[in-house]
Length: 72
Image 1 (tube, one colour):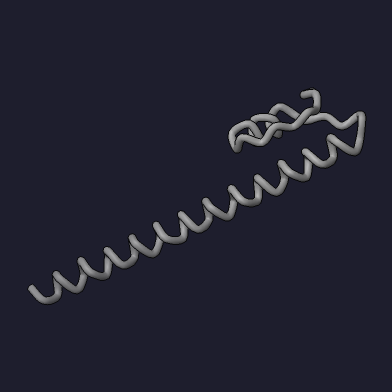
Image 2 (spheres, rainbow, N blue to C red; image 1 turned 60 degrees about the vertical axis):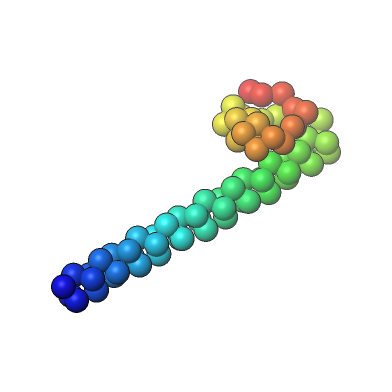
């Protein structure tokens, strides 16, 4: 019975470890996407011929960041 408890505890710790790193990775990727959107937002203000691709527009829309540039 003692060995079964140790195995279950080990499995739970491994699962918690993977969930923790998945959440950290998700947060980091979302922050990177925001940085990209804000950079594109600034470029749209500076360069009059600046445009977004559909995927860039979708990325920034999903984060609630508005960019005044045409989509091509």
